[in-house]
Length: 185
Image (cartoon, rainbow, N blue to C red):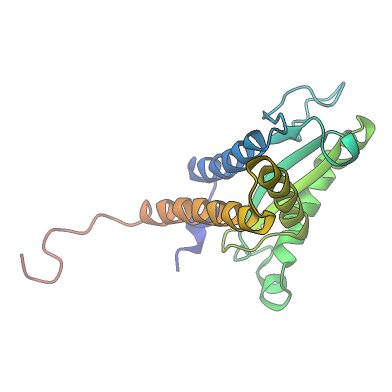
């Protein structure tokens, strides 16, 4: 099926997909006047931890927030059996992995840590949907548009970005077809 291509770390495709998704979120936050910073360094004192793909200095209740994008394949061997029987199982694994690494450091620094987990097949974690909806509400207010319309548009942009990069990851795995495919030129 080509599912290995969506999770393989053998080339830079996963990073390109991650960064493209991060950039859509960053651009939306920037358009919403949330003063985002991309890949903000040194957020956590005395730590090399980089918990924020997108850092928002003033999030809910004025607290800073570190948004950390993570994309997981529910088809990988570690999550397949759970993902086959429980919706969102792979998303919970992805969120747990991120929280183990960054949550405690962020709490000590007074930063709200929000892993934005999505599946390679398009599923979104509850925290990701809530965060994207919140960014959308800010953007809708700024643009004078209905929040639901802006939210749908942003989720569509993120989904198209995911699938565009998934398609690239799949197509890079196939050998080029010869000019003479089925005996006819």
